[in-house]
Length: 319
View 1 (cartoon, helix red, strand yellow):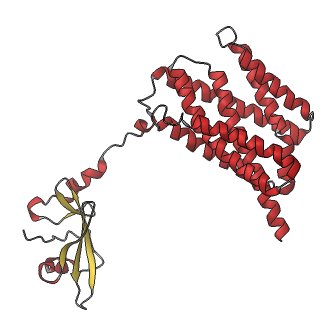
View 2 (tube, one colour; view 1 turned 180 degrees about the vertical axis):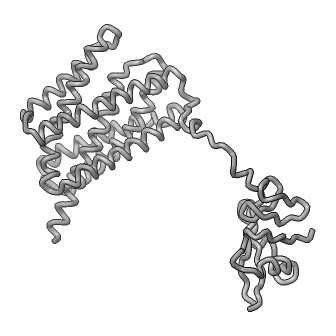
View 3 (tube, rainbow, N blue to C red; view 1 turned 90 degrees about the vertical axis):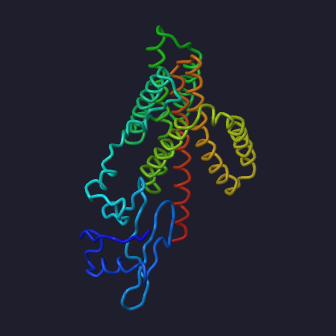
């Protein structure tokens, strides 16, 4: 079949001889010189003897279109308007956020989990602000023990409608004291370079969002096998920390930081899928599930702040 082009004034309007070049391609050029995924390149020799690509055509529903506008197959030639119809399809972006593998009740449960998580983030920020800026809360070890005590109390209190408000109050206190405990580390980062804090927070938000979405879109139980590896990583970190008390190795401390960051990223995947699996099996304790994700976020944030602070110190020493 002899193929040729009808120049409609849309392709190659910067070269008035393009139509002639395409029409003479049967003798001077070649058609279909580069075929990749349904695309064909059309090359022709110009008056100076050099070969150049003058048009690219893509096969769409059996028709050859030039940039979606000009038809190169005379038997299947269509108007520019009909050719553009393929680009007028409506895209349903809501389908991106429909998790068909997660039941409706579990999706409602996840909404409560992430709403509680947002509340925890706000209260932790308030606690950190009071500690760093206003200096109103400066209790050091006491606030750490208080946060630990509240977490144990929350874990020991059964989930029910009667205890829901009580457990939410305990959760709020735990989140607030956790933010207060970040105060000394935040002050250290401010002394080194204040930009470390927003950089670490933005990095933590991106990491947490990406790993959470990966867990939500993945098949159920796809990442639950990571549990054994992640808990082994935690024990390895504890072991390195104990050894480093006696060695005082900077290299071992740095390695422990990066291992901890990778482990915490893995826990975001694991905890998110574990929450889904528990909810599918009837465990609707969204308050405790929120604690799991909140601790993951705080630990990643802490690891990133320490890593960025160490790197900034190295840069200052090199100067």
